[in-house]
Image (tube, rainbow, N blue to C red):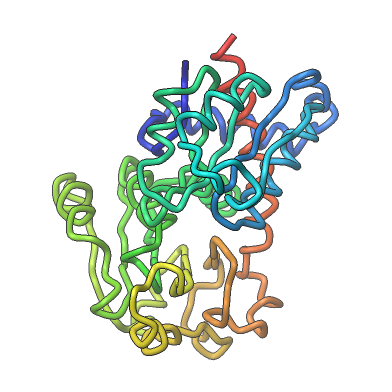
Length: 305
């Protein structure tokens, strides 16, 4: 049984193959509209989500399948104290594949051990978000035509940002990728990620607090919000939440072909005035999420047969 819990569960070749399938879906959607006819996806979201949950559902519907599930823990038997393991065993009796989001890190691992159908981690706490990473990789590939030989700036909450952790891990496997890590001191990437991925692999990276001085060298700018839900202290959140606000004037020295990404939702870290800039690609990124999840569902269901 194949699951996707961590982006490292997939080889570089598998990621490249799924990106190719997603691009084919974009070009020839009619060829895929009945690929999952008669199959069911369960979306088990113990934590709120808009894009991830709806993109999974849209992906399955566009493949000709059906969807069941819940959008918050309170509308499931978890509210009665049911364990993740029991929920997964139950849902596996009804569905062919499961997409699960949970606030506790490691919960999808527990689910995968107990599940009789493929489990996709749709985000666990501040840990991993592999399908957002696949979305990011597809977007970068479509915008740049490659996943190597580039400088990627990651800005904002690099400590709790699971999308950042997964993207760094994934892109560190491609040649000649440099990271510029832009954050306040309190929100720097976790030390384990720096040691086990960047330093251990000899990846070129710099850490800075200054977005504007880093801007001219960037091929990709990946903005993130400061996540209120990850803070234990409200005062710390209020002090850090507006550390970076991307406005049109801050793009004056950026490359003409810069691609600005954001996993969304945004709060105010990207001004709405930036939305009309052709370099703003975060809503196209949202669309790409549906296509790459279609490719992932197809892959896992095919391997489960």
